[in-house]
Image (cartoon, rainbow, N blue to C red; front, side):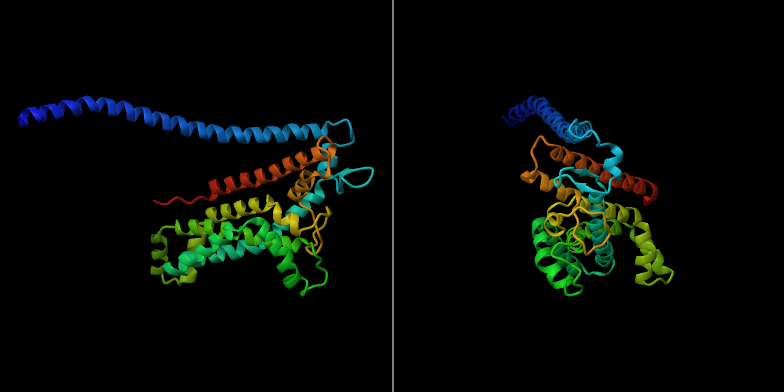
Length: 321
């Protein structure tokens, strides 16, 4: 009886094994096809976005309503007033200058603070303090950008900037830049800390064996070894700052002017696109089409920064075994 039961169980297992193998192969093939489809969807979505931007930008430059618009007048013009006056001006430099001014202020605020915080979390903080500080940074990363914009209007400008100087108005580039810097601070800190913690412990131990202090090890060994990751974190954060919309739309103002004065109000490229799509211009007008040209310019800037980041990573990447 026992022998018969064992033979029956063996026959059942033998019959089920090919079936299980077929099912497993089918499932794995389906998962592989699903992953390939999602990858293709991501690439196709990016390609469609670029195609739409390029097509609408081409339509902006080839419009018959304003034949005087050219690549030279667009990229080198110093006046941007598409919605004001009888003769609209389409020189994108004021928008680019406003965007770069806000981004520069944000970088000055976020990059050194984020790097120093990352060094502290990686090299000095205990496990408990690291967990607490990272939780605070995660809270900052989860705050909606519109909240940062209202924070800049209701706190940074009236309580931090205007008591310091009467030159600061309600809307100014400094307030928007500080708020954007606070927003990108978690990006800088988190990615820089990951790069620092990826440095092998053997490098630290070797420096300590030579009599180095903790500061020497952090500043002269760990940071240079993680330089490629730190630079990549900086560029990613700056790219995020360039594309920020709500903070600059609320706090920077709406006056497009070619200036480097942080007390003046400026208009960024993203803020202009918000203004257009709020309904200030007809959907078929030249002003509406100009928003796509501005968006394509913004895409070129972010693509250039990403390309620089890839070169830096490839050139200065350190590989350890």
